[in-house]
Amino acid sequence: MRKALLAGLLAVVAANVGAADGGAPLRGGVCIGPFRGADSVLHCEHIGKVTIRQIYEKGFRVVHMQDDKNTASYVVLVIEEQAR
Image (cartoon, rainbow, N blue to C red):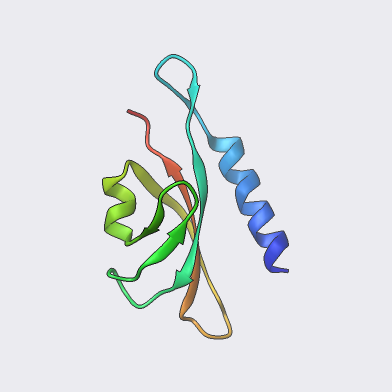
């Protein structure tokens, strides 16, 4: 179930990726980890271990968040690079 959810989320990101700087594709990815507020450290593709604030500082934005319904403390974020 979790793999299907991640695959679906990645498909949404891939479909919404625009072009920046004359056609260069934007990057997108998934972040996972325990969520305990704004200072939570999540592991993200492309940018490593970061907080929510650092995701934005590195030029990405959160486009989707899914929490684990069983624990409500584990999240999956879908991020994409912001156009420059």
